[in-house]
Image 1 (cartoon, rainbow over the protein chains, first blue to last red):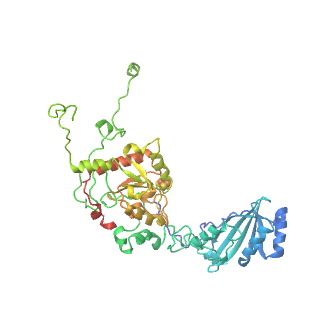
Image 2: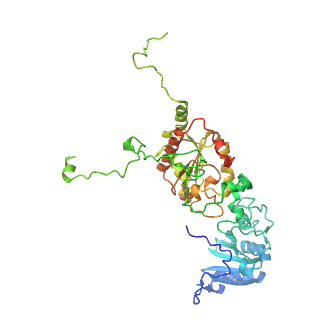
Image 3: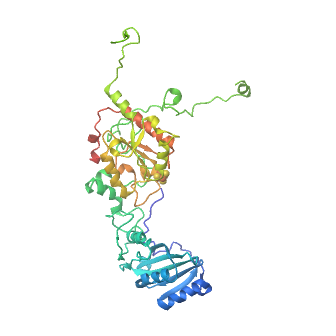
Length: 271
Length: 171
Ligand code: SF4
C-alpha cells in the first residue's frame, strides 16, 4: 500500500519545486471581444461593482461583492435571461487568503451562453442564500455547508446533506485528512458500541491486503473453522484437501492441476 | 381401511431413517437460506443478477427477502459508508437467530478502493462476518459459491449453537 502522507499544509507548499516551472494558464480574453457578453457586462457594470471580468474558454467570469450576490443573480436571471443555475460550490483558499471562493455557474438557454459569478468570503463570513431564485441552490448550499462549513443565511433547511448530522469537521477543506481525523476513524464504533468498545474492535486496518490467520475474530478459514475467538496459535487443525468435482466434492469445482492427457493426432481422429 | 398392506420387514425395509438432530436441523437450515437484500453499491447489481433467472438463486433455497425478520443471511453487497453503519447493525440485530453474514466485494471486506474518511474499513467492524467474498465486483457464480460454502459451514456447526455467547465483542 502506498504510504499515506498527511497533506495538512498542502496549500502553503508548492507541489513543483522546479525553478523554471510556470503553471499553465488558460488565456483570458477581454469581455468586449464577444458581442453578447459585452452587452451583458455593460449592463452589469452600470448597476453593480464588478472587480474583475474576463472570458475564459468562451465563458464570461465576473467577480462580485459577496453582499450583492442575490441582487446580481436576480438581475442575471430576470434581466439578462441566465435562467439556469447549473452548479454552485466553494473553493478552499483558507491557507492562502483566509477564506473561500464561492462560484455560481449560470446558463442562458436563449442566448446559449454561460456565465460564472465568483465571490470571495472570509472564513467566518456568511453568504446569503439564493435558493428562492434557483431551486437547485437549495441542495448545493447544503452541500457547501456540509463540506466547507460555510453558513448560508436565510436558507430554509440548512443541515448536513451527505455526512451524518452528528459529524464533526468539514471534509472538503484542504486541511481535512483524506483518511479522516480521530472522530471520523472511530465514528461507527463510537456510535454503535460506544467509546469503551474502541479497545475491543481496534483501530481501522487501512491495508486492504491485511490477513492474520491467527485472528479468529475476523478471519474464518473455510474447511477448518474454529469457534469465534478461539486461540489457535498453538495447535492448528489439519488442513484437508479441497474437494473437487471428480472426487465427489463440490459441483463444478474442477481440479485444474490434474495432469491432462494430450491426444495424439491418431487418437483424435478415432474419437 | 387399508386397501393393501405393506410388509415393511420384507419389502423395502422400515420407513425409518436414522440421523442426528444436528444433521437434520442443519440440513433444513442450510437448504433454506433466506437472504436479506442488501445492495449498497455496484455489488448489489451482481447480487440481483444472482437472484434473477439466468443464475437462479432459488435452486439453493436462497430466496431474497426484504425484511430482516424473515431472513437469516445478510449479504452485504457494496460500499458500507459510515453514515450507514448504524443501520446495518440495527438490521442485523433485528434478524432472528440463527443468522449469518456474507460480506460481498472488496468494499464490504476491507473498504476496498475507498480508503477514505467516509467508508467503514471492513463490515466486520460493525457486524460479525462469516464468509468474505473477494472481488470487485464478484460475479454471480462466486456469490453462489459463497452461499454453497456457507451451507457447508452451517452443516458442520452444532444445531444448538449460541452465537451470542461467543460474540462477546459485539454484545
Ligand atoms: S467491491 Fe467493487 S463492485 Fe463491489 S461495491 Fe465496491 S467498488 Fe462496487
